[in-house]
Image 1 (tube, one colour):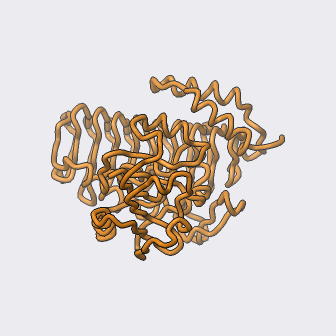
Image 2 (cartoon, rainbow, N blue to C red):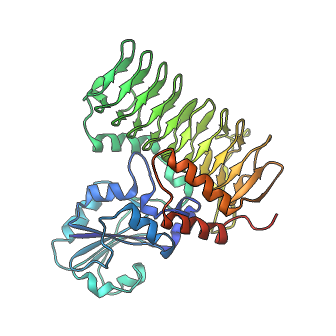
Length: 410
């Protein structure tokens, strides 16, 4: 069976995170949407239908995926659907054995479409309009990521589920230094090459803790599950991390609570990051703090790119969403429900605006355009620190974002 993940028009609501990646490459816990889908529906081949703007970087990210349209029996999955193995996934798997096309729909959203001959769909946009004449099976209760804050909904449960899916709980293959404390070892995975240093506490009594290869929990840090630390993650000395997923080769210090750090980003110093989402190649300066609760304990609003304004989120706790390649200086303060775009450079006293467009430079005293050529030089330097290169596909995409989505005017 071929598996093809498709993007629909609603991925625009997930700006700025989807400016630089396909929606299925968003981390929604310890795993990305794509990783969860592949786990539930192991494919013989993998294909994508993405927006043209991210097609090249998606192909770069997944070099083994099909570059041509799939043929034969194919399962099309919505790139915003957080797949969890349950009765719905079992029903979809069963549909693949019938030889007849079938659509699975939640409300006005096509979650999945099984088609015995994908060639019939070549050149046609996958969506509800494509299912005319195809039997539809209504489903409910599935998680579909529609807005930015949906990425953080039920995060603790997601991380715990992912930790069990990743497996190996109860395996302590890494190095535990004298004086380190591991609580509920049967709910902890310490991969080979990982280290928990003297004085650190890894406590899994409220949820599993999965620590990847080459990761380090430094002296006197406290990691309280459910938590997943990806490969080569560093939790700095005296840090406190709980209910969070920290992706590949990231560094975190201070306090991190109910947050996702996608990968390759740094929050290496003291300061609070709560109910927040950082993309790739972000850096938070020392003593950067995010507010995740309004003083009146009211509902947080957050900027929505489609609405063009802040809209209600239904959440009481919500901090910062930061797009790829953005940075902030020491002592930066972010208000509740702040959205920072791609390749921003923020500094200064006071709070920056609650919506910072991509390629913005400045802070509370005002924003001006961040020159693309300078931003690209910074991106090259930052990526080199993680032995990565800014490819032509990366460069072209960032230039397009600067032109089409960046701050305009001075």
